[in-house]
Image (cartoon, rainbow, N blue to C red; front, side, top):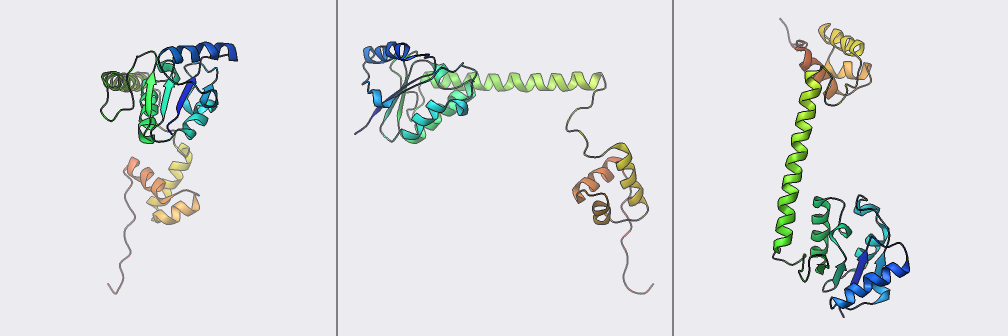
Length: 204
């Protein structure tokens, strides 16, 4: 028989949860204390760090119903909220948010609320990418290095290049300097160092 699960992440004590359950009951949902999960977590806390929510989701089965009080119960960001909605949909359960009314957020055909969330997630991602590009440009403008820090110091890179110029193979240089062939090749490519000449077999 399908079950109804109720979850809230804004509850400090049983009395507060009783008020939340009253809201769910008034909205027409079945309230079973055995399937009621609550905790007090700020909206910024990731879903993975909400143990009671994770515990509830592990119990949800196909045909069940999940009821939450507000969107903040589903994720710390728009993207994470969409991930939680998708997870409930994959479980084959229905998902209702009292804040949004009688709308199954996990229905096969996304309701308007989910479409708006997706648009907001796209906008959020675009703004984040723009901020990253602006930060990189600002760092370059003042001479700060960007990207991953080099694995080797300038002296070590110079020694590797010197070995390559002397005819040492990439593999031998990698072994001697305790690094990978890919790293040696990147250092060589970055300095335009010539590759060591291949040894010809046979008589001249």
